[in-house]
Image 1 (cartoon, helix red, strand yellow):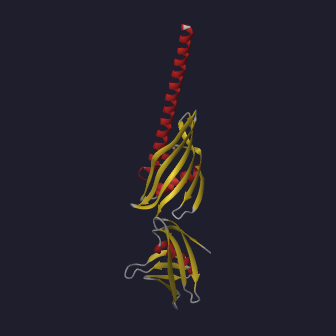
Image 2 (cartoon, rainbow, N blue to C red; image 1 turned 135 degrees about the vertical axis):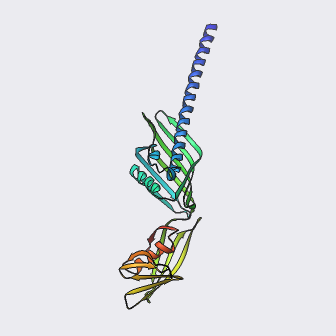
Image 3 (cartoon, rainbow, N blue to C red; image 1 turned 90 degrees about the vertical axis):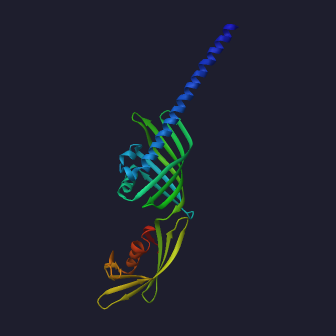
Length: 273
């Protein structure tokens, strides 16, 4: 009886020690994966200063695939899918943008699961893009990272992001144009302004001259334009500012909107037809 008790006790202690050993190993693996993802986010946040694209790329696999679902400030959803080359090109655009700054900070780890050489990490992340101290975009993101371990350590195979936009001060703008019988135009522009979008109405008056020059007035702004030629902003006694060239009235207005009136708010204009 005593011998049987002793055998059961030894068996229990062995199983318990194996359990503790497995638990400690699992915790070590989870801690390692969490540290890896934290290092990745810090490298990405520091990219505008480091200018070192390799410091971020080293964390991801060349088989990288990502999906981003974005809900903007007015509740519209967009989908972006990309691969390693797209990610690399995006990092290069950050490095080449001189006054940009990034915040990409983990608020919390919602789930960390490791099984052998595979891992899944779900994070709540604060993300922010600014230029010259002015916030362009601020979002809250729930991001799922899928990782795999090889002889060189962990690599991110994919990340899936659900992004909720909290603030947008610069982005894609929409525009509609309406022509009057007089040859003048009215534009209706939708531009981001923080927690929402606003709609602005602008009128453009075209005054042609005998020498071929066409003068454009929009409120207190004045422009000179030669059809199928140079479009300039008139600055009074200062030198006129070249905004580009325009073939017709439509292109001239779109240039004025994007290069002058809303250059701070709009990365590009899409015209509704």
